[in-house]
Length: 239
Length: 246
Image (cartoon, rainbow over all chains, first blue to last red; front, side, top):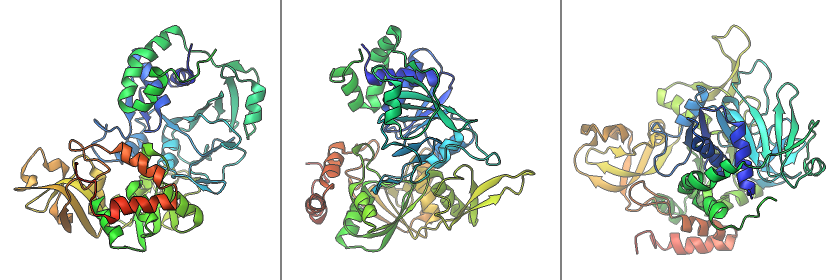
């Protein structure tokens, strides 16, 4: 029925359902799909897609995004990382001798926007006990001005909630086909766990929207992704 | 890009590159060609074409010095220079490993707060040269960059600004109310040269799109030293091949 990308998009859509303004990066087709799903459901959501080739949302240059976010005008943002640790620290610079592109705006945006951490690869290589380099810290001491921070970590295997008071993640649900033990095995950091559910499959109404108006809207900026998920049928279906 | 290819042909060396706020193909070409000593940037990547292979290789071998930034800190440092002040404050960033690596950043107490309120101060940054490509220059020496206002910021902040343009226009664009908001005044411009399709394989809005296939081919070729040299031989040493429509 549902494809993995559709499941992840529906999960993210539920996590950001209270948003009125979300910014989405160039390499984030699944978060962008989640935003388009909310819009297709009739939510009056403003979606600012960065690096849009036509109709870019900014007229004051590339600093405008950070000025907007710094004022608190963007509710949610998405970040990933070459490494993410159990205190929600992000590393986008170097790991295991390999150089990655760099921190981009993470050291600022993580303080300014409620952030969904999103990384499809769920492995001990990515989810580490301690990042080798802190591009952006997961939490800050009380005297440091910080508007927001991590909300959840979504991977290709599971959904974790961020417990700000404990500075730890809690495993909320595992995706269909995964088990809590398997997730524990694939995760390099410690986290809390009590009752673990299964990530809900997309509802028929959600799938209908995803495969209709959402797919069409996404194809404009992420043509390769839209072709892969909705046209070619090469992605394995869940169940 | 045409100016970047020109720098490689002239065997420029020891360049320090500053990304506003990130770098891409230009930087990867210059690094691979041995023109670069230092990279100061929030990121170096080829965007949808993936990692910048010559940057990654040079950084991993320690062949270049890399100073990591975060995007708004680059803008803030240049805005300080625009205003002629020694530094500007920036929220966020505290607790990042970027902070201790920067002698030009300080953490200070917000003097307007009663309680403890540490804030990052970013020192003004003055590039020697701003180099970019634009759509038009006019007879008055003004340059039109449209909504790419970060180009205006670097022109305001740099000691010298050199611009390649698609076309020269008659008249003075500052006399045109519709064009003027996208103009950088000649006050800030040191030199202009015409380079038709000079952004290729990158794009100029409304004129020509990014050549995605070329970028993907570059990203593949430049994974190896040999592939990169072949790329230079085909597209850089042989002046302007393929940069004009066939």
